Structure formats: C-alpha cells, structure tokens
Image 1 (spheres, rainbow, N blue to C red):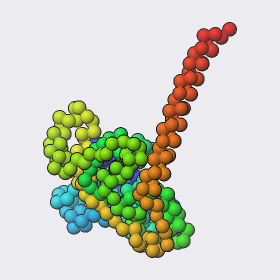
Image 2 (cartoon, rainbow, N blue to C red):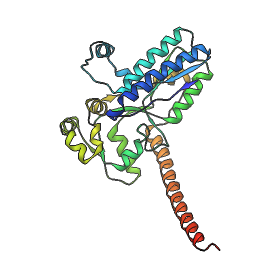
Image 3 (cartoon, rainbow, N blue to C red):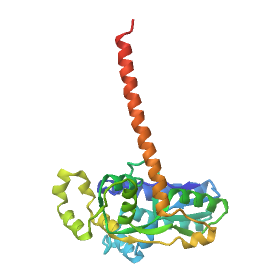
Image 4 (cartoon, rainbow, N blue to C red):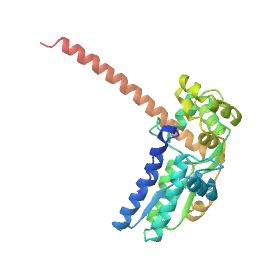
Length: 278
C-alpha cells in the first residue's frame, strides 16, 4: 500500500483541516493495515521534517509554545512518521520516503503543484532554497522500494538543492519572460504587519504568516545520497525536470484553450440548430 494523500495548504483558514487530514486519517489507515494484515506499506512524508527541532516540538505540544514555528503540513508529517514507526514495531512492513519539493505536471492550480504556474504568472520569488526532485523519480523509487522489500528505513529523496530564485529564473528564461524579483525576509516581515489592510486589496496577503515566511526564507537542503547508493539510481536534474514539465504545461494549456473554443462553437451550433428546427 502507498500512502501519498495529504491536505496541502498554506492558507491559515485550512490549518485545522491540514492537521486532521494528515494525523487522524493516517492513524486510522495504519490501524486498518495492521488489522487487515497488509504486507507492505510506504508512507510519503516530507524532507522538511528533517529541519524540525524535536525538543522544540515537544515544547510546542506540551506547553503550547515554540521558539521556531512550523507549518501545519510539516507538523502533521512529523507525527505521521512517528506513527508509521510505531506500526512498524507492531509488525507492519513499512518504509518512509521524504521527497524535497516535487516538480511535476497536472493540477496546476493546486498548492502542491503550482510551482510552474506561480513562477510564470508572478515575477516575485523568495530568498530561500529547497531540495527538489522530479515526480517521475519519486514514483519510480517508491515502486522499487516496495518491490524489493526494503522496510524499516527512511529515505530523503533529492536530486539537487536549489534557490527559489534560480528555479524561477530557469523557468522564466525558457518561457521568454523577465527575470524574477526577490522579496527578502525584512520586507516580508513588514508586509506581515500590514496584512489586515493588504487582505482587503489582495486575498493572497493572508499567506503572510510567520510559518510561511520562515518556510520561503529558509534553506531546506537535503541529500539523496543514501537512496542513490542503495538503489544505484540516477536522478533527473532540476533543469531537465523544469523543461519537461513546462512542455506538459504548455500542451495542457493549449488543449484546454482549444477545448473551450470547441465548446463555444458547439454551443453556437446548438443555438443555431434550435432556431431552425422544424
């Protein structure tokens, strides 16, 4: 069984749902797997959990305070990992993969899949960086780990580490667009205090929270060395991924545009036919 589902959102209004979907649903799924004696289980976590300070997390839970804040998505993945290892001790053959930022195609408007859409529509980018990996690599490795019966381990999946500005520049360059503009942490913190006013003008201002600012300014780098060595695997580079999925993006947008034109034409034809029905 592959557990890849999660609610991903950086909108404060969705935080409770993100935590519930991640933690409660995963707990229920693990219990069902143990009861039904599922033989193999792979959990897709996030490389961002590597940056969690465990002592700090315990303070957050026990005393409702924290020196460093984390997004609900990262918190949910942290506790899900603990539950997976608990189920592993109880007899479930489990393995965890923790990808960096996944570069992929489809669902362009979704928050976990809008990298290309965001970088293309806006010149704004951020000073942080992340490990990144192609979705084709993630799916291939997930299948191989299960097929080769590799359990009781956690693998960070990263092709390379890159700055957001470099990823944005690469994408906008091949699209023939102007260079991105970096908004630094200082400016983001100033805008955060103006959020109540800015939300009136632009709803995206609601994303200006401490957790989100920390996320886009941090350098969340990871190494995929362990799984490269274990599986003798070669990753797509970030540049190769961007070019490939940008091609898919263009094709999908082109087909979508043509579909709308076809629907409009059919609508006009139907209206014409109805007026001339005998």
